[in-house]
Image 1: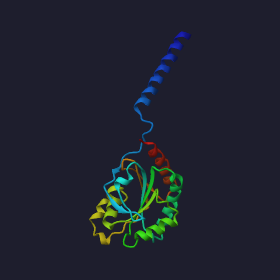
Image 2 (image 1 turned 180 degrees about the horizontal axis):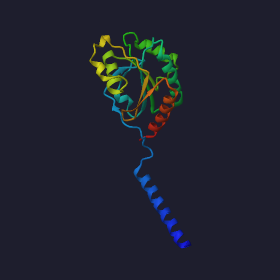
Image 3 (image 1 turned 60 degrees about the horizontal axis):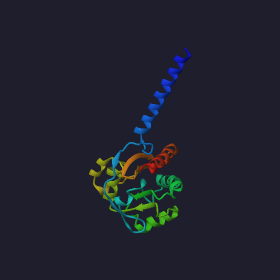
Image 4 (image 1 turned 90 degrees about the horizontal axis):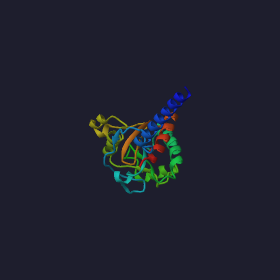
Amino acid sequence: MRRKTLIYVLFFVVLFGGFYAFLNATIDSNKSRLPVLNDVRPFSFLRQDGKNITDNDIRGKVAVVEFFFTTCPGICPKMNTNMRAVYAKFKNNDKFLILSHTVDPENDTIARLKVYADSLGADIKNWWFLTGTKENLYKAARESYILDDPQNNALDIKEQFLHTQFFALVDKKGRVRGVYDGLKKSELAKLTGDIEDLLKEE
């Protein structure tokens, strides 16, 4: 009886060990489980120091993306207060970036973006404030980062004003892997964890 029990125990130990080895062989522990939501389209914008920035400049980096305007009296200051906390956690990682796009390029000049960035203590090394044409900025928000309905691009650009509290998370390959409410602590906690996961991805 004892021998039979021992055989059963050994059988299940071997079975469990084989299953565990199979999981380790088939699952890449360095790969995040976050879905791929979209691909970032090619872009060209001006940074707060006047340098031209393209999609090639963010390849190989994990980026958090937002859209705001410097004179916003409502959600933008709250969003950027929360973004500062994210920035503080990852600012020493050279594979991390924040891309803050203005939605009011007519008023948010490069000089104004520079002053705003400095007021937040943003190091240009990994927190970029970007401007460009209104049409290209809005298309990026909608068609690349899925932060607004792409159908809104059909409206007269002069009549449009994009105002969103959401952040997008982009992986090293230029793919959107998550969208988060920039005003909710639970969403920001998830964003932080997901950034850590994507930084580990090869």
